[in-house]
Length: 304
Image 1: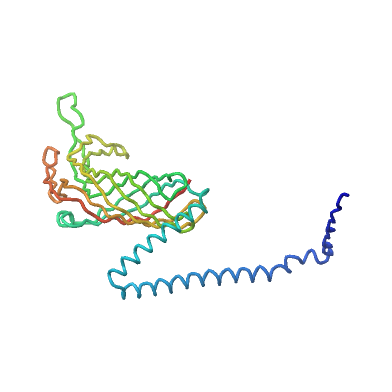
Image 2 (image 1 turned 135 degrees about the horizontal axis):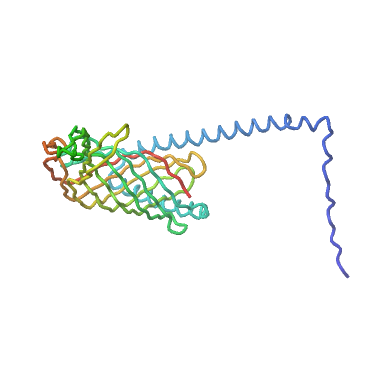
């Protein structure tokens, strides 16, 4: 005997009358306002609790012994790895490569700060690609920092006229010293959400060079001639970096970054010793030191 299944009847709610359908947005408005206020209170409470937790943690940290601090450091590192794996699993379809760039300031350290007086400013950028869907990434980067520049007025030989006389024009010799860094790095970026801290292990080379060229103003436009490299030296650069990204819009982040770099000994031009001779050549002295430094960078990152 075949069993007969009972099917519950489908009940449709009656449509609103015409005179009430136009008022439906006003009926839902209090609910939307309450939901928005609830979300705001929820977020503020979350930030407040985080701030209280950080303050309490800082106070307890100062009261701990060295052994207890080591245990806490290991525990925190382990928790970060666990949450990173969990977040990577949850966000596995959102892992993507990124391009970042920004302005940076270099702070010389040790002998470098003694030999060189100043904080070279410049630009930096890098490209990173994730390793499958893991929080590990590999990438390449480039940075340029100016170590100094100066302009000198010179007389430039142009041609010889039909009478055999040499013709000269006024020109400007531009002398530029810079650091060019080419690097590779391995990155650990545990989270792929709105806030993304990361850490890099860096290895690359530093190229210290000084060049000059001469520009001549011809009828309102400048023409550069006689470009010449006066000095160049290369050394290795290794270190680490820590950064933080905060999402501004889909695929766009504001990024802050700190680098701690060490290098081998290198020679570079002493900017205060540069002299332009009468025959439009330059003479200078060099200094030698390791180029250990801190780098501070602020810019944007774009994921793709």
